[in-house]
Image (cartoon, rainbow, N blue to C red; front, side):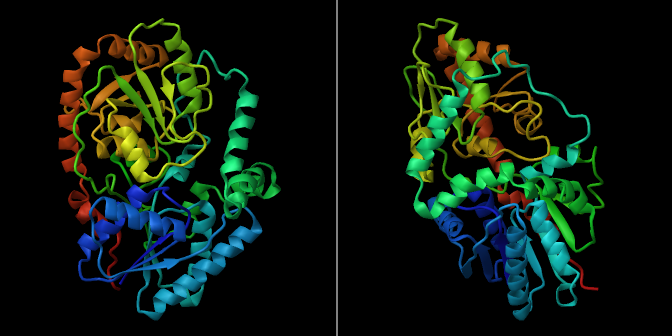
Length: 434
């Protein structure tokens, strides 16, 4: 049996990465049963995306778990109880290893603490690295992003309050603590400040480390950058590139004018700065910037900007619908972001075969290579806005270039297919019996 656990994500968060890992583990271990522990909302999201991508996983058992990582003593005790029960259950069926799809320092501490108990001393773990891993670079020199001429949005606090009130009105009562109360607790409760000092990512990774712990990075650039701050070899780190199931590519859009899109969370402050500068160009040609996500803060009053679902999450079918006629995705993360993790934005651009216009960024650069370009890289804000202006004015000229990028994306999709990472995936979840 292969035991997989997702102890942090709910709903559609990470569902593309996680479905790719589940499918990959099925390919590596075709005859093994799979047991998947996760929040019920995430289980449903995984089932939906597997159906959407036409992937059938046989002999899989879904077990719903409840967790609340509230950065509190109660939250830690909740995880302690949850993992203790889970470890006991898997040991009862003769299994002593678990594939963990995401984690926080608190979770890793609880796992290592439990492993010190005699009953769980033989347990082994493979853990996937995500955004928290960025924190190992804290205290070291890090690149800074481009200087933003407009660092505050007009009426910033009014916009923020209106946006949060809109989310609260649309929040179901059962989700109210998670959406409304948790951000307050995270910001103001003393435990938050204590935990960030005691349970830093670097400290917990190194604490009680042994060969029973292995880690997976989602892109080669993560390992390369991490080596500046930590010994990745000693920590048993592997690379499985964007474990994604790619559906059939959609047809190329046929538009009368260019359509840009921000897919997912985006970067509201950067977008606001772009819109301010773009509005000063006095463009006569039509264009659209579509926010395929819930955060449209700072876009009020700007023409040509649309957001189909402000303050409301879109499901996968809706996101796909709104991405269908887009020419190019805007990825607004600068050099200081995603140095030690991988943004889902690049994964979505590959999934929907969309070229990218992006800032110089280690993560995006590792996929947008000179020998197989899938988009356009800009060094700063002015260059980014100028490129958008040029595309708007000369859309007919860029249509051919976009077609070349799409062909290159199809080639890259084949290289990134989970089938090409099965050896690394198996090595990351294999231990020799001593």
